[in-house]
Image (cartoon, rainbow over all chains, first blue to last red; front, side):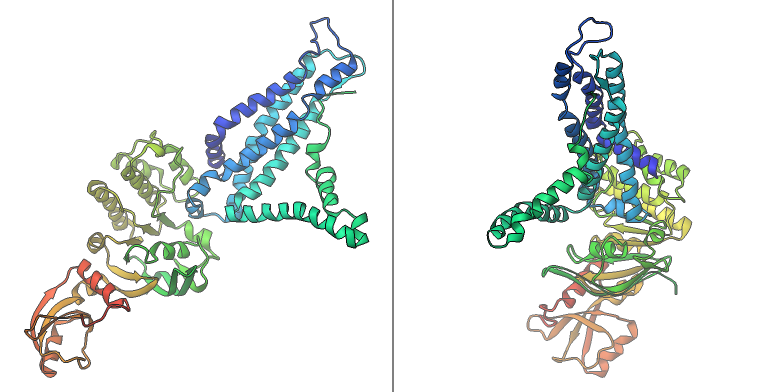
Length: 225
Length: 302
C-alpha cells in the first residue's frame, strides 16, 4: 500500500519537486561564490568571506519552508478535488491512510534534503577558506531536514482538514496574535499585570526561539568560525 | 433471511433543505437490489452513510453482518464501490490506477482484471484525464469487480453513458454476479435499466422510503383500472389506491392501484362498483404513480 502511495505522490509532485532538488543542490554552491576554490590563488579576508556567506542565509529557511509546505499541500490536493470519496472507499482506517500519506510526503522530502547535503559537501570540498573559518555541511543539512519536516508536518495538519477547519484554526491564531496584542495594550492601561507581562509577545518568542519553529530562526551557516 | 444491508431508523440532516427521515432498508443477501428515486431524493447520501463516509445523526447500520462505522475497514475490503461521479486520480494511467487500487485489496484478481481490460477495450497506458466518460465508467466497474467483492454498491453507474458502453458495463456486472452470487445494490433514476436486472426494489423520495418489495410484486402489483359507480370513499379495498382520476362526465374513474391480485375483481361486485378494465403498468409508470401518491400535496382524487 505504501509504495503505490509513494508513487502516486511522486507522480503528482515531481514537476515541482525537481526544481526544489536542483535549487537545494545549487544553494550551497551559490553561497561560496567568490570565496575562491582549491585550485585558485585568491583567498579572501575572513570577515569578507563570512559576510558573503551570510548574505545567502535567509534563503535556507525559506527554501525549507517552501519544500515542506509544497509537499504537504500536494499530499491532499487530489483527495480534496475528489471529495475524499475514493480514499474513504479504501479498506483502511482514516488514521492509517493519513499516516501513509504523511510518510510518503516525508520520504519525498528527503530528496531536496539529500541534494542540499550533497551540494554542501561539494561546496565545502571545493572552497578555500581563510584561516579560522570552517564549513559545516552536515549541520546545515540536518537543520534543513528539521526545517523541512516541521514545515511539512504543520502544513500537512492544516491541509488534511477541510477548508472550513483551516480557516477557523488560522483565524484563531491570527485573532490571538493581532487581537491579543491590541487587548494587551488596552488592558495594560488599567491593569498593572499586563504592563509587566507581554503574553502575546511571550507566546511568539516561545514559538520562535524555544519551540519547534526555532529551527527557522537559528543559525543557518555553511561557513562560520 | 440473511441481509447484506440492514438500516434502521437512519436519520441525517443537511441544513433546513434536506433530511433523511427514519430510513429503513433491508437488502437480502445475493439479491440485485434497485434503489430508485428521483434526483435529489437522497440516494447518494444514503449510500455514503452506509459506506461509512458520513456520520448519521441517528440510526443503526449493518453491512454484511458487521457494524457501520465500527467495522468499516473490514466491510470495505468486501465491497466494490462505483460512486456517482468518477473519483479516480486523473494524472494516473489505467494501469497505474489498477496497481494503486490492487494494493489495498487482498482478493484482487490480476488475471481477471487484465481480461476485463481487454474485454472492455481499455488502453492500460491511457491517462485517466484523457479518457471519455464512457471509458472512465468502464474503468470504475473494472476496479470494483476485480476486487472480487461480496457486494457491489453502484451509485448511478451508467448515468450519462452511451447505450453501447452501458450494455458493456451491465454485461460485465451480470457476468460477475452470475459467477459469484454477489449482492448488488444499484441506485438509479433510470427505471427501465433496473427493471431488467433487479429482483428487489426500494423507492426513496424526499428522504423517505416509500416502498420496498420484490421486483415481481412491484411490477405485477401496480395496475391502472377503470371503475364505474365508485363512491367518494371506497370501503376497505384489498389494494392500495395510489391515484384516482374522474373521467369527463361518464361516471367512470381511473385508479392506479398497488398490491393488485386477480381475485380482487370480486371486491367490486361486493361493493356495487363495476370493474371495466385492467391495464398493466410498466415499472416507470408504476414508479411515477408511487411517487405521486407519496407526496403530501398530491390529492388522491384529481
